[in-house]
Length: 511
Image (cartoon, rainbow, N blue to C red):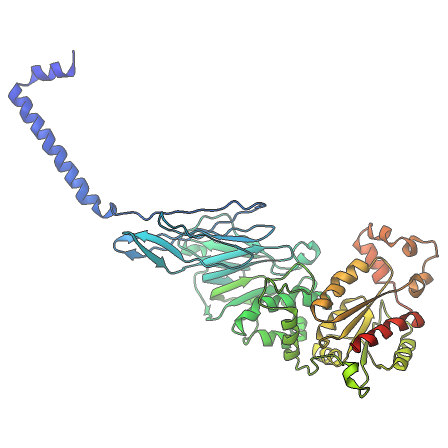
């Protein structure tokens, strides 16, 4: 029996008609009530159009979603921000809210990008003010994060908190703020810093003890600090690249702080920042900033600035150093214009313990006879004194080692002579000093000694592999190579053979 038959037998035709009208009115009342209650939520919704290209070689994706709510005409505006880190080339992609007729997309490799957003409300474009931005770069020799927004630095836990309304959490970002990425030996000494994007207030330090109105940079003075070469290529030059844009209006928060290192480079630090240094590891207060960079920028090559990718160059850096140490000599002597009125100055870099010249007096005598005014000095940690001495000379010579890094103080068009010991140093000599010197507008001469000029011939028999096959020693590892060729070897220059090198330097000074 059907439902219609049962319904017809239970009610008269008149009663059925009344029930139908009542049901219709009831449905109408329910529909009107629904419209009244939910009317504020039935307005036009913003259209979110997010396009993200596939980047070949992407190995790591880090996304931080931040939402800020602003009341406009009864509608909520939502903005989202994404940071993408490419482990091989460092890419950041900005996601933008837009209408269906125009999608904004900004892609940058290794450069900071804007994070303004555009959305559609009632068919009108409204630009929302940037709330926060985090850009983390992973590059061949360094990694660093640039943050903008409500940032709190807690030195007790080595943590930087990035406040956000909400986020897509993938764990804290960990950085060792020393720019020699990939060198485990150096990183053993460097403190880990954690970067956390937080939602709830209880996850952040409970109070902001000190507020600052200038940006901050967090970097370490550990790693290989104390080695003059690494001081400059791993810390000083990267710090210049990272902080110079602020023209002194930046605070340095130093982790693994070494007082002797600060003393050594005080002139440079004071030239880059007008503010007192902060030993952040010892701070009990929570410091708050609107802009913080954790780690330092640098290029893969040693002592190098790629001027095609940076607003600065090695010429700018050397000019900065001349200003920091009040160095007077900008250009090396030109013998052609000099007319013999002034002798060119030759700086011989002396060493005491290893890779030292054993016949310095003979070298000085020969150079003097050629017409040089000779200065022999062993460099130390008094950078101002060393800088003044080196800057006063036109030619600098020394055995391969960290002391040659002081070539950065030579005047323009000066000459660097690197004496290269035996042991297969050619690649190291070229990488550390040969190529960088050219970027500094210096003239470079490499002098490769013969086996007879090495004191290793006094320690090993003529047929020993140390003298005949240094690459076999290299294959056994850096420590064995270092213990022999760097720590046991001195140089007894063949003065007559080396004379040709100094004559070439004189010729260059006439050009």
